[in-house]
Image 1: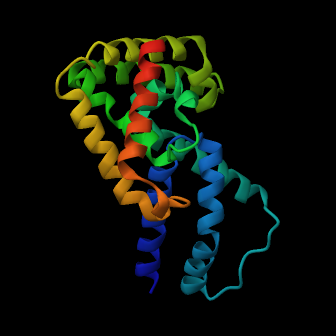
Image 2: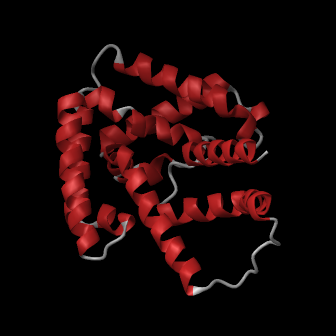
Length: 214
């Protein structure tokens, strides 16, 4: 039972992270923690037979939470180039009719659009910035909002924008939007009422408008 429960927890966390890629680390952590709390309690009880832990948190509990947040930030950085890119104008894409799961498609399109060499170079720059920010006590969102963070984001934007005239760009992006929407339709509020083609067009048009206006 415990092995199955572990897998259920992992799959739930992965799905929530994928569906809510536009949230910052604190918001996503809170949602995941709330959604998996009872599952973790079941897992603990299956190993120890103990009663659920009381709501009060000890110093050790707080320390463990802080370490989990640090690990979470590091894991998110695997996709940091896309996150820096979307952070530059992402709020303009979040509008009625565009499911949040589609925002992650735009972020994940960065490596294939700008190319592996440029992606690695930018990833290295962000790694160094994050390391510097960690030493200064800044969290991930503060680094995104910093002047060097915005400078890197604008560099990603320029490289990305230069490649959007490619004949394959629009087709590939639309296909990825369509595929993601179909996969997540059941988890979207009122998803069954969505017109997939119209929703993809709305998301694509909003994104390309952001690219044109900067």
